[in-house]
Image (cartoon, rainbow, N blue to C red):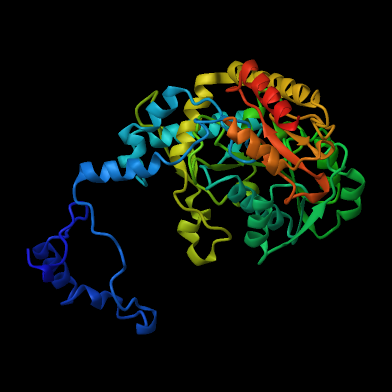
Amino acid sequence: MKRSEGLIHPYVPNAAPEPRRRLMAAIGIRDAMELYDSIPGKLRLKGPLDLPEPIRSEQALRRHVEGILARNRSCQDLLNFRGAGCWQHFVPSVCDEINGRGEFLTAYGGWPYSDHGKYQALFEFQSMLGELVGLDVVGTPTYDWGAAANSAVLMACRLVGRRAILVPECMSPDRLSQMRGFTKPAAAIGLMRQDARTGLIDLKDLRARISADVGAVYIESPGYLGTIETQGPEIAKVAHDAGAMLVVGVDPSALGVLAGPGEWGADLVVGDLQPLGIHMYGGGGGAGFIASRDKARIVAQHPSFLVSITPARAKGQYGFGVSTMDRTSYEKREKAEDYYGTTQWLWGITAAVYLALLGPKGMQELGLGIMQRAQYAAKKLNAIKGVKAPALSGPFFKEFVVNFDRTGKTVAAVNRALRRKGILGGKDLSREFPRLGQSALYCVTEIHTKGDIDTLAQATKEVLS
């Protein structure tokens, strides 16, 4: 091959000279660079990128990439007690087996005629998750919990015709930042105080802040700091009495032991599917959901697709497809109130597999097991001189705050020492929430044994001695 013809790359289709010429002739150009004529010259790279020679051998490429990956350490390589938005749960093999099937893994879009079961799987996901959260309507997955919360609070504002949102002061800083950016053109966010001792919403402060401008009150249970919000019905009453809607963020793995928010007054429920059979992937593995009551005016505000069931012509058979398509950004285009893409449908199917596998009894056993382990871990850490666990007195599920102020050591120093012992300690909260002092957020799930927790306690004791 002449050098002027360029590289014929084994992994890039139509890289050979003749197919390239035919493609360019079909669109009326002589040189591929003509495709970039609309880009000003000052913005174009003047020469080739300083890149190494391409690796054309698949074997050599695999060895090269695996060598890079081998330098990483994952939560599988450490005894991990960190969560804060992405949690290490056990993933049954069947979840990986089903989401790896070709008809699901490669079905990016696909309408009913090329569906191969994807729509039915998503319908089952919606049905089971709706039962879990205590509401009737669940959309197909959003990008993550944050995306779901952002859309849900704006749904509430549109439904009541208001432009203010109240959120907890101790919600995830990442999620709060995302929500501020997403809602800024349409609504203003105010922070509700949380009791410094319990971590629960300060009801007196909520009553002082609620007004005729507030369209959505957003709370989380369990919250970012692990506390279960036991005042949910009271918060719902305050919001509803003021004409606002209550949006509740949840960790669905807790709903085998906690009542679904729809049962105690939530109008909209959001959360992340990652605990439901999805691995902790670097930069991925998250998928959010939005659930609501089955009222036409609320359903009309859902940004995501809704998969419905309908009887087929043949008796006893059914079909599945998208309903009320006219309300989506696919139909409304520039007039849409929100945007929705194909997003994380595969994770919705995976969550459906997980929920179907465990069932109601399994979800209850999961929740009880997690709570028992977390309580044991807090008790063991609290027995160490200078350590306070939990640092907040409110009830918690799988995450809790541990304070090290009286030890004279910083969380960063404790975590560095634990890391040397092969343990990933809790997330350092001292920069996000300085008022908590030297505190860390610890996470315990069903993957942790009594021996694991005892190892953490002993290692922490040694680190602090």
